[in-house]
Image (cartoon, rainbow, N blue to C red; front, side, top):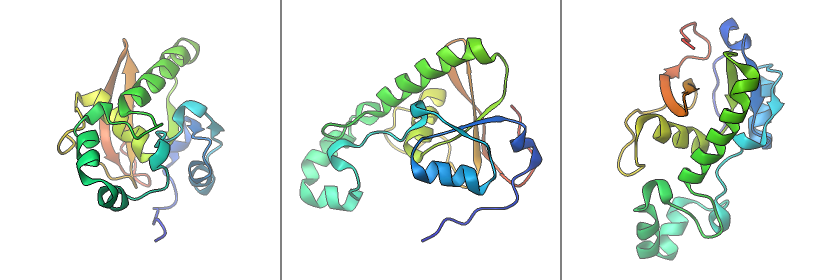
Length: 168
């Protein structure tokens, strides 16, 4: 099923400096929206290790008890040989903290992946990734996060890409 995107992208989105995951699907999304996005390794999807390319239903069918045990770890869920959401948060925080002194208040945009966005949501809201997220995210929209004083904050969720309602 092909993703349906609104077009064209609102002018205010083009006023940001754009970065993207180096994975092809993020680069293609940036190209679709005519964003001059520089690839940034820190924005790459969470590494799923031995689970890479597998569906959740497949994993549950293989070993339901083991998958349930791993899922119960929330932020510390880690596929064998993979990366946890907590590690994604650390990766993004270290990258952002190194970038902030160089960029100041510059508004950045990032084209990334669901695992990365969910990890940021957890960091910004204190969600332990157990149970439902505190905010239902529409991945066809923009999600505005801010990093300041060593903390992530969710500024605004589900900002239309073709509208004009960004705040930060």
